[in-house]
Length: 121
Image (tube, rainbow, N blue to C red):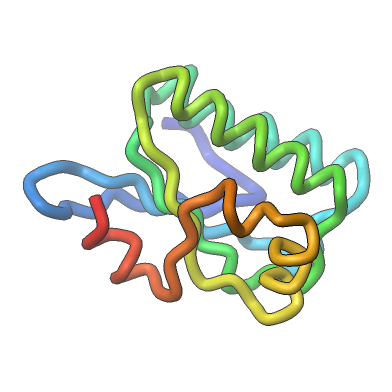
């Protein structure tokens, strides 16, 4: 696995399988360069590292752009197409309100804590 600048990646055993925990490092998910780097790193998890059981922790994110939402939708699609599952957790109130307003709260499997997300696999 390569080095990542926008995300932290950890393997965690959960219910007899290994789950990849991904923590986003940035507080603001916006801007074309950041979005391109983040998308590249997330896709590398699937394409290069064959990781498809993923918890995406957004606890540090307090702003998310529409471009970032689009990247997350694409990431989820790639995970599912690879036969995996994606869970999100730890949405800040600001980010959760965006997910509610856009109705993406119904699209993603969102758990309140990382532990809840891990135990849900």
